[in-house]
Length: 117
Length: 114
Image (cartoon, rainbow over all chains, first blue to last red; front, side, top):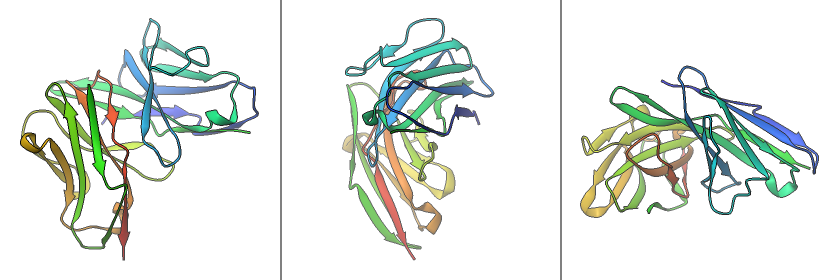
C-alpha cells in the first residue's frame, strides 16, 4: 500500500521558536494533503487542506499565520508552527489521498509529537 | 454536513471474546466509512473501508464491519479478541473517497483482559 512519512517523529522546542514538520508521500504523488491535530485522549481534528501549487485551506478557528503550510511539490507538504507556545503541544498527523484504479483512500503518516516548553 | 458518533469511549473484553465497537454516522449524501486503529504514539492504520459496494466489509487482523443504512450504523466486530488488539479505534466518514475531508469520531479505547 501507499506510504506517508513524517519528519521529525518528535520534537521539543522552547516557547517562541518555530518548528517545521514535513509530510512526504513516498511512492505516489499527492496534489492534496491534509493536516490534523490530536490532543491527548482526543480525536483527530482537521486543521487544513494543503494544495500543491496554491494556498492551503484552513478550517474554522485555525490561525493561518500561526500554522504555515507549504505544498512545494507533489510529494511534500510542510507545516510550520510559528512562535510556538505550550498550548500548541500536540500530536500532528498528515494524510494524503492515494487514487489507483478503483481504489481511493487516505493514508496517514505516523505523526509528529510536538512538545513546547 | 457529516459526522460520526462512537458509543463508548472505553470497551473492555476478555481475550477470546467478541469485540463490538459501535459507530453511527450522519451524512447528507451517501457516505464512505472507515475504521482506523491507532497504537500508542503512532499514526493511524486503516482497518477497513466501506465505499458503497458490499455492505459487509472485511478488513485486516480479522475485523469486519457491516454498513446498515436503515440504522445509519457501521459497527466494527471481531469474533475473538487478541491481546494485540488493544488500541484506540476511530470510526470516520467522508464523501466520495480520498480527496474529501475525513471527519473522525471521538475514538474507542479497547482493552483486552487476559
